[in-house]
Amino acid sequence: MTYNLKDLSEQTLVITGATSGHGLATAHQAARAGANVFLIARNEDALKSVCAEIEADGGTADYAVCDVGDEVAVEAAAEKAVQRFGGFDTWVNNAGVGIYGELEAVSTEDHRRVFDTNYWGVVYGSIAAVKRLKSRGGALINVGSINSDMASPVLSAYTASKHAVKGFTDSLRLELMADNSPISVTLIKPSAIGTPFPVRAKNVTGYKPKLPQPIYAPELVADAILHAAEHPRRSITVGGGGRFQVFGATVFPKIFDQIGSRMTGALLDKTTHAPHSDGNLHQPGKDGKVEGEQKGRGFSAYTTAQTHPGLVLGGAALLTVGAVAYLVGRPARALLHRKTHHSPLQRVRRSGERLVRR
Image (cartoon, rainbow, N blue to C red; front, top):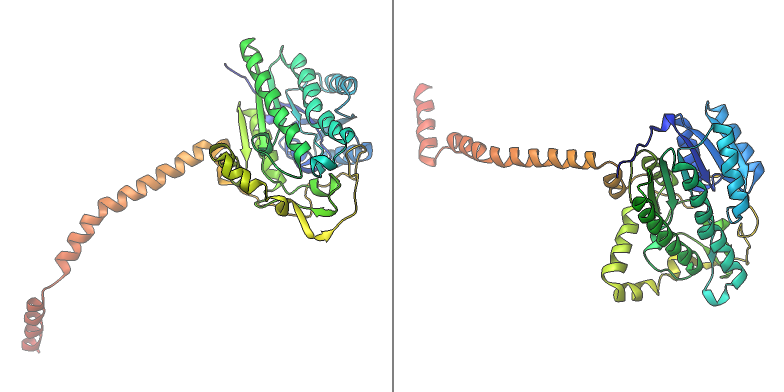
């Protein structure tokens, strides 16, 4: 299948969940690369502020106030993007919410709300995007999680929704391939990312939520999203630490179950009590920040290997050449060493010759 994806400087991107975390980072990076950006979120004040920041920096941006769990609102937002920019080239389903709490403590209403945003938001956005991209081609990018591939306690409702996102995305890709549609479909799977997610999620645990180590910077997710906007990729996992966890859960499931059942301490600070908080589950929160309280590392060799395989191959080639040169040079160095190395008898003779010359 051949996909003709444009350079970012020639694209218009639609980004949901664009006023916080890696959605906000993606909007800023895309605009700096010359793309038009159309932002979707629930908080209009934050949307206005982000658009103003982008335009002050020389970019072009517009927005639609939209709850992605509302199919009619998503369709209207997509149509507004078309009217504003004449169409779009990449649609990014990034909006997401979560709950910290054991499943028995999570109400059915809250569990459904997580799926309204995380799963149905992806479904509605994908259908709206595919309808408009089939005639012009482009990229559909859905943000899942490493939790699309592995289980987690405390974030169980969130994890279930991300499993659903993976199943939907992979199935949609097959149908589009069968239909020979010119739409690249990518699933982005971030590891723990240093966004405001822990303080924005609903919390019914009684303890302060936190992200498990290792934590990666939101900009790495933005890099992966924008790479997929220009290069067809089936999926990109952001962060080698998360990929290692998924590997363990897949290859050694029973061992991982034992380890995973004890992960509560990695997700909750049991030394800090916190009151129950509704977060931004049902209402928009205070947006406008890319980073949260926990900062993430700004580099992942594993992610770089996925998005820039040429760099990895080039580095491997240099290492190979260096190793070969070193090994080839060893005999020559050894021979040179032998030529300049004198036996004890030779050293005595040379000393005697110097004494005679004196």
